[in-house]
Amino acid sequence: MLTSLKTHASPLRMAVALSSISVLFGVCREFLIVGLLGFTSQNDRLQLYLSIFYTIGLSIDAVRLSCLNLFQVMSITRILFSASIIGFPFAMLVGLVMSYTTGGLNHTLLWMSIVASYLNLMAALLIVYLQRHHFFLTAQMINVMPNIILIPGMIMCYWYLHANLIFAMVCLVSAIPVVQCLLLLAVVCLSQSATPCGNMSFFASLRVFVRHFAAQSGEQLFQIVARSVFYKYGTGYLSVYAIMIRIYAAVRFILIDSFIGSKLANWHIDKESNLFLKMVNSIVFAVMMVAFSLIISLKPHADLVFASIQMMVVLCFGFYFSTIVRIIYFKINRHESNPSLIVKFASFEMVCALSAIVMATQFNYPVLAILWLGYIAKPFAQLLLLRKRYLELAAS
Image 1 (cartoon, rainbow, N blue to C red):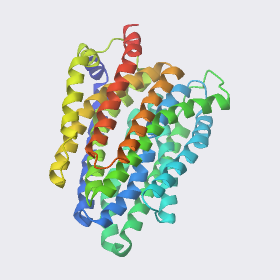
Image 2 (image 1 turned 90 degrees about the horizontal axis):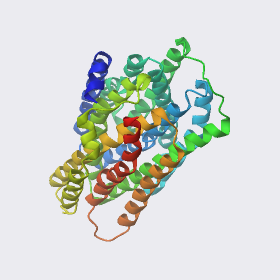
Image 3 (image 1 turned 30 degrees about the vertical axis):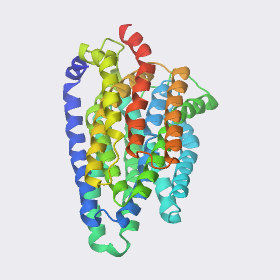
Image 4 (image 1 turned 180 degrees about the vertical axis):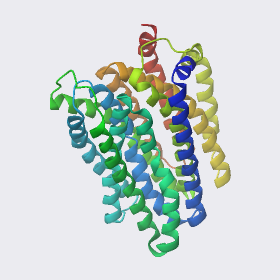
């Protein structure tokens, strides 16, 4: 992996710089929300709508992976159509389930969040398509745009629309993917991408999307359960959890997604660095991390500060596993469409979500154990699933 980073040093460094600026604005945005609203019920209500964006946005990986499987055999217009057939109903389902599990949301804001979340998925599809066709930095600049715009926008909302602050902020967030899609479509129209060499049928393309969306549906369900649990557990817990998960996703965006995006155009099947292969093969070390993080998560604390520290520790361990699994899974899908592997990968996601539901129905269970289940146990099991096929590709 280190050799690969050197090979793509210039565009990757620029992408990391752009991503870092975006994440800096994103972190500032989270603290700005806390500064404006505090850890209050009003902030928790806002986080419910923002959680719809985040939860539906978890399908971005499904869209990206499907695009990688389809770009050689379908045009971008057909890929967009197939993605919409699956993506929009899926966004509706997630939004409505989130509304139901939290006791009902404002219908206008709910549907605004659903439509904007669907457009966010389409923006992700266009971004990975451009990355695959040597428009990495252009796509990256459009990709990092939201966080840079949101901070001044939220300040304006607070100053001039304070009476309807939640409504104004949801409208602002919903407008971002609309602008992104327009800019990305303009770049696609100006690009001269190669003509697809295959002719996959419409229903075959739908099956590709269904498989990848199924692989992410478990993660969506897990997030719905986890956020509902923290929302009901006590005031401020959902806000703290939401902030930490966004920071977690932001760091992944800087370090891992920038690396993957820079490699999509020319990701050859060659051996990775010895360091990364050691990480893949260090099962004993991984088991020790799994056990240690479980011990941390099982200790319940009513104090919000201490619980926040526990969340942070579990997510740090989880980031290690997520990094390995993410690079492995994207590289496999960059080179092949493996339906059997995708279905098995999806089964781990669903088992994790169903286990979280069972835990949430128990009395006096350790709440943070749900985080351990989703961010430690699940990616560790997926690593054991993927490593054999990955090592075969790396050695070929």
